[in-house]
Length: 282
Ligand SMILES: C[S@@+](CC[C@H](N)C(=O)[O-])C[C@H]1O[C@@H](n2cnc3c(N)ncnc32)[C@H](O)[C@@H]1O
Image 1: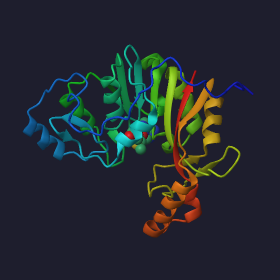
Image 2 (image 1 turned 45 degrees about the horizontal axis):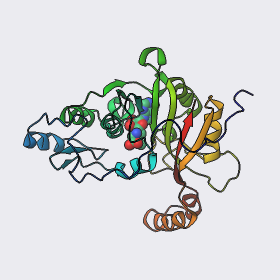
Image 3 (image 1 turned 45 degrees about the vertical axis):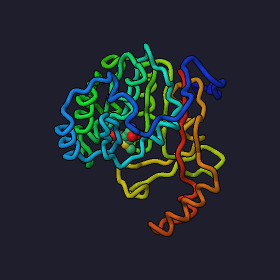
Image 4 (image 1 turned 90 degrees about the vertical axis):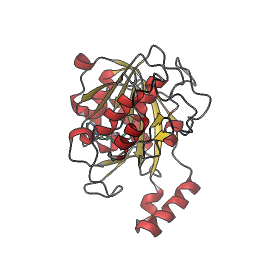
């Protein structure tokens, strides 16, 4: 079998790690990647209110988009290098673009945001948030409406850093998706994902034929961390390291008890669910 050399990474590599968590949008940062305010505040507020947001994005002037996701918390788990100067970054499944704009703010030379389902598919999302935030921030992030399986290094290029945040479990065919991701990764993949079956001691994945995960029919798989590492190996990544997660058993037990009361979900199934962040290198 190919690719039997996957090993965990030595601590630290050629990108610089952040020394602190990301600020939570307290208005003290410059308004955006370029620091340039391009729109009148009231006009911007009116436009922000017309959009259904997934991400909370600090547009400056005290305006933070009302996203449903606490992406500042996820960002603090990613170990995204503080300094991305001279790096090229691909953000796959970018939606409103929070991580793309953050990569640009950290100095990335080129950032490409891609998505399809939320930008032009049947979900409740749209591309309007990404486009408004890009204008408001005076950002140069590029965009491409493309399915993960149609990503192509010949058409889009190869990137130093690829972000694949919260997307893997939406893939019907995760191995083929990771193969595509691998083909565009020049140095490092930063992968964040839902994981399940945590007490299984061998690679395994839960399958969600309907809306078992978060009542969302676009979720298909809950691999355990060993399965994610195995898939990364199978598609040709040389090294991989879990840099965050999964949550501790006491944390998961509290959360599973809460989910059982609130949503009548089976305690033991929720107990086995969490998230991880993995850095993988080619
Ligand atoms: C849970 S959201 C995560 C968004 C963002 N990366 C984050 O972590 O906040 C999943 C994203 O994956 C995108 N997505 C799902 N299936 C896709 C596909 N086949 N091709 C491209 N994007 C896809 C969705 O449109 C959505 O933006």
